[in-house]
Length: 421
Image (cartoon, rainbow, N blue to C red; front, side):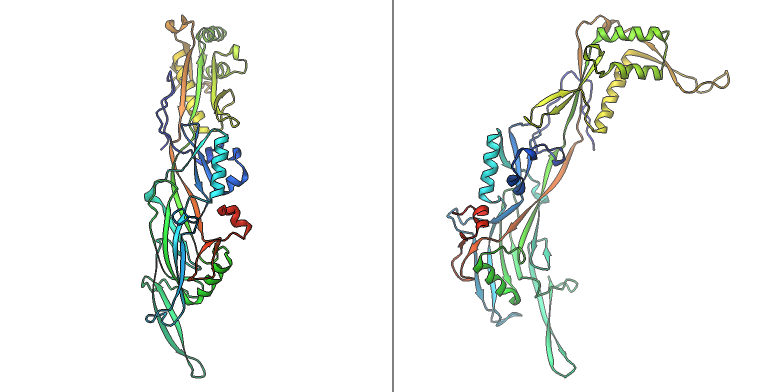
């Protein structure tokens, strides 16, 4: 529901709580380098000019206790029972961090500080956070893969028997699971339970036999696992939309001088189109020293982030409708409206004008030397914005499952992303 702060106030309201601004009302993006914008979605604050918020677009395996090692491990296993008995599988697991890549995060902090900002992880609605695991051909949105598998025995045209595996998610026969295209046969994960876009997500998985060698190869050459296994965290961020404000500066003495002169020309009985023309002429006219009413619109200077006034109205139709209501209210203070008859007793008459207006006395305002400022404020209300952090397994170095895992320091992209020297 749109929220209209009552207009014709003598002072602007500032009771809105600080919150990120909706992206469509953003001006910050152009103030940061392409590298920062590539890795982070940035929000300004609705109230505090020196605060910004960020959501990382990418995350990675977390550091293990801050000791410079990845929080990831893997080993080969060969089950002795069950559907995969006698087959080589890979058990792997670890923790993702949604904080983003360290060098890029530091770059964000540095650029923000140079512009006078302090950057914080964006506040999120943790009840609305969604986590999706991409495990090959299947997407699981509850952080779990739990299979029920059996084998169907068939006979070919030559009478030779062969078996076809059939696996299903959560014992649901409508959710058949392909062991060739999907990488894992089992998956469990923790929930993302953070009130900001800064969280750790732990997981444990067991591969399918068809993909255990692909996982081993990915670990040995330190490549990105995006074709095998990755995760997305979808955040819901409560944001404020842009507030609009206009100041109507009423020069009462000048206004009544113009009004008396205009009314005299029309025998002190103006029809509605004449009143409308007069109001348009004296409100927000180009010659400021001749305006009976100055209309100043508040805008944010994109270079400094500071508020300033201008005569050019914004392009928000709803706000301009509120300003128009303020104009009508001012008109009501100046004119008495005499409604026209619905039916004429004189026969057919010109219907182009519907009412006649006469001047109000307004003795109190006619004697005022000072000006009045009426403030018009409008806010469309809050809106929820979604933003996604993609969590990837990459830049790991080892001799395969069952061996020591460290960060890959040989690939240039790993030095850039993870900050390795």
